[in-house]
Image (cartoon, rainbow, N blue to C red; front, side):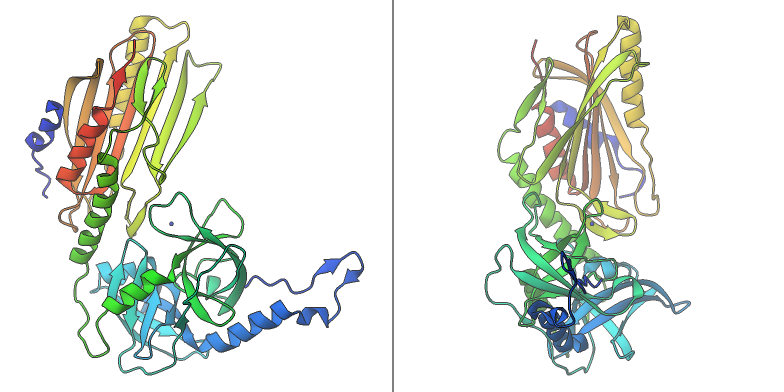
Length: 443
């Protein structure tokens, strides 16, 4: 959509919007472990897994064509004897989005290298399949059994440019609050290991390295191997042509993703909670996380209690684009020795501050276009604005924002914002309407 997005399309809503974990020598009460202790079964097992797997794990490099310089690195692994390689989408996204400027290559542990061509992507699960044309080699097998919490696993990859490494860790089941399936793996997965395999002691893949929790310790995430197998089965065969363009497929996947999320949230009335005399949406699904904050500064002449909720379903699309389908926040403000006129002015300033967000990355998006009105819902009078912008290079995707401030009371005020990113236009506006209808005044 161009910069001239019609305000009239936005208006009708007001009619009723992501190292080697080496425990080398254990120290106990009796001093350092003996050399014999260093040959404990687990250490021997890790070495055996590494020796069997090292020829099948690759470093993946994204190279700028103009300068032949390295722009990004990650890991990958051979998943078929025909030369198909599994990695993460975020490792190869530059190639998917700008194939004229970037190319792929692989490097083996022995230093040998060659070219790769990208043949399939799955942005929802952060996976990609590349291919070494004419390649014939042994590949990893897939784990056919069921992993249980506490089972030992081994993650392989190329962390921080230090060379191929193996991490010994623990399978801890599925991540509970994520919309898409992720495995919680306790092990030192580091940058550069993205796209490498996580395998059992038998060397079969049960997951793909994808992310770490930057505020945690040894909290890693894996994509279940089943999604990699599904993508591999949909990739072009060895002799088939590689896709020349991925943006349309990425849009299709993102719209499918948001349809699933918004469809679930639209199916029933949003759960609500009370903030003083205001009734506002609460955590609407298990994959939404909410947290609160309280501002009580001595110099301020008002109090502020806030609630923020966000879907745990973020998708990396490119360097400037990450979509998190739904995020909303509410702030309850109450004056402390402030008159009605000054409090009304404060609410207006808070509302205007909310509306002055950065309109960044103009190469990727059109400008926000807004429509503003006074509306009433459930006895609650609001000054509200709906704003929208289109994705220039991903036709059919939009960001929508609803921002509002209450005008009911001089003793308390509500300032709120709903943000939808990477959604379809009509589906997004339907959720904005659904959200507005959940707001109420409870005198």
